[in-house]
Amino acid sequence: MRNKYIQVFGWYGVVAILGAYFLVSFSYLVPGGLPYQLLNFTGSLGIAMAAYSKKDRQPLWLNIIWMLIGAVVIARLIF
Image (cartoon, rainbow, N blue to C red; front, side):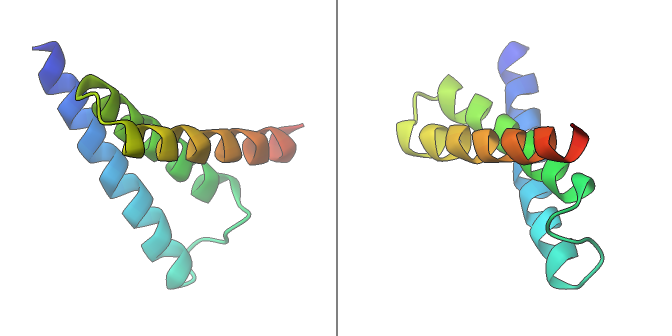
């Protein structure tokens, strides 16, 4: 059952990151805005969790770095 939740969150991550890219590309969101950054942060967290559960290191590290970038930008926007 736990694996099912990780897979669902991993798919959420894919949809969130692609959705964020789509929304920025078609000018529905601004790249520096909080909604865009939150979609990228939570999306990368979902993909990182799925990659970790499968011991797939390349997407894990890519998404950890993606999350860190998002966290820094979110912190700068909030504080």
